[in-house]
Structures are given as C-alpha cells and as structure tokens.
Image 1: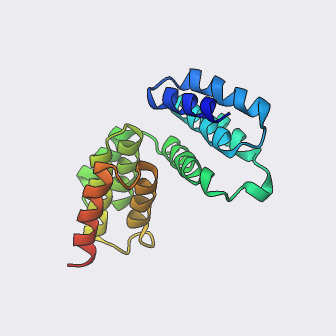
Image 2: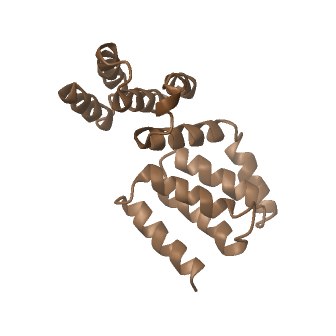
Image 3: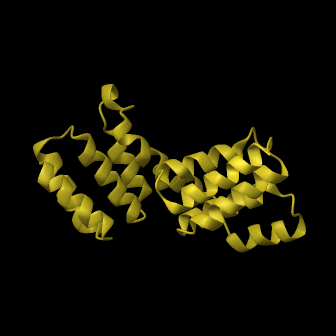
Length: 173
C-alpha cells in the first residue's frame, strides 16, 4: 500500500492525474478508509478540474476522521476551486477595477483567478494590495485568504516565502 501511495503521488506530481487516480482508487479497494488515498484521489479530481467528484470523495470520509490533518490541504484546495468557479468573467472584473481602484471585491476575485491559473505571485500581490489599502475589508478577508494560499502552496514554496515577507512588512510597519 505504501509503495502504491508513493507511486500515485509521483504520478500526480508529474501531472498524470488520471493514472494517479487509478492507483489511489486501487489502494482504496484494499483499504477503503486510507486517508492518504482519499486525499490523493480528491487531489486528482481537482487537478482534472472536477471539483464535484473531489467533493464526493471527501464527503465519504467517516465522520470520526473528517477533521484529520491529512485531509486539510485538499479541503482547502477544494474550497478555493469552488470559490473560483463562482467568480465569473475576468475581463468584467478588470473593467470594474479600472473604473474604481478601490473595488476590493474585484481585486480579491482577480487574485482567486490568478491562483486558479497558477500565477501565485499575482494572486499574492492582489491580496497584499488589499491588505495595504484596507486591511479591515471583509473582516480581514484578504489576509485570511492569503493564509489559505500559503497552506495550499506549502511553507517552503518561494511564492509563500516572498508573500509572507511582504505581509509581515505590511502588518508590522
């Protein structure tokens, strides 16, 4: 099982989400409650753009294990994917921001779209700009969303390190 989980994780990291999903599913045939396999399968569906199937996988986690840390990152990724799916047209958001540079909701939504496109620097910069302009906006929503991004990106990611440094400068200067 451990070898199969490693193989599936390697496939997913290499961009072969379909093949990785098959391996994670095979692990679940042997151990239906394997949290690493459940998390991995949900990650595969997210990588394939199928948030509904990822949600279905996570919804079948036994209640006693629902809050396990193994599932936390994939739950955060799913939450972001669902938020991004509801955003709408990027051009319309850009037009709103051109008309009103203090339209923090448009800037926030554009940051989520940047995150969905894999542009971590633009995602972080958009949220940092909101923190700089109006930290209290949406109950400190930009800072909180940035922390979610950090969780998804991982502490060692260069984008996380850079944005954390910028956030600290904003908050403590």
